[in-house]
Image (tube, rainbow, N blue to C red):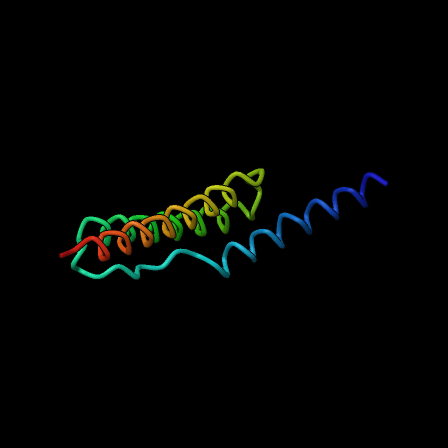
Length: 91
């Protein structure tokens, strides 16, 4: 029973990791919003560093790295929305 629970937990961690990886952050804000674009670049760089840390530690980071990647993806999306709002407010 204990091994079954460990297997299920491992599967969930890996599935979550794949889901997050498939939807990773991208730089899609143009130079018009240079600060937001730079922030997106930092987010994508941080995401890549977390990928490297996960590989170096064989994924044994207690799910915290995967959660950090989720939050970075969310921050990336919020920056895109901020740029969209700024575009709408331009006269």
